[in-house]
Length: 118
Ligand SMILES: [Zn+2]
Image (cartoon, rainbow, N blue to C red; front, side, top):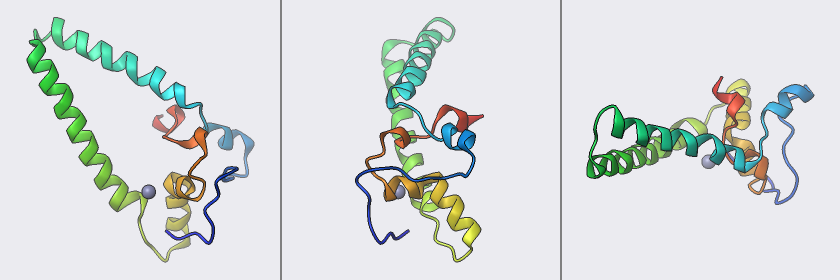
């Protein structure tokens, strides 16, 4: 992935459709608002349903963070930065992640948006 210029302002246009374009953006706080309740619910659930001790919950939590960090690194390294001569694959890589490097200060595309998961 190589760009002639890294843009510190503005954002990429990913789709011609305004509706699809809207689905690629979200406020950064939406991600926290989505994940924090899930994290707290799973901690509560593991304590009440599986009777996990605090030390086991902590070990599971930090083990999950370690696993996620490794997974995200490998996914980033081998999928998001996929090098191909095929224009279709280049377009997919740009839509999935390349735009993030092209416009690194675009706060609306810091992470994948909730519609991306559906
Ligand atoms: Zn990257």
